[in-house]
Image (cartoon, rainbow, N blue to C red; front, side, top):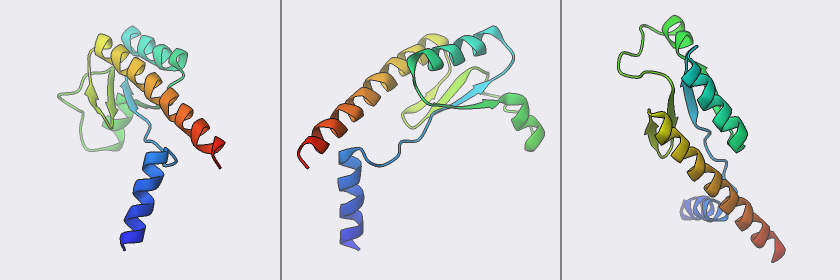
Length: 108
């Protein structure tokens, strides 16, 4: 059992575990379109989820969450300026992981 957890930790530190993509809750507003464009321009992978799909496929609407909103491992981001900051953070994180993968593979 210890070997299993050790392997998970080593893979995490090497960056070889798959990261979870952020989920963008959107509607038909111009703000949602701008946020989607920011993610695409930033090269950050994401999953787009239209708020109406939630209302139709589940039991009710989301009363406290107004699109655009980003649900990520790091937290929930609701304001467009905060979402922009998150995208910058995600780009830096992605470049660090790619850099670590490059340096790790050069020693093997």
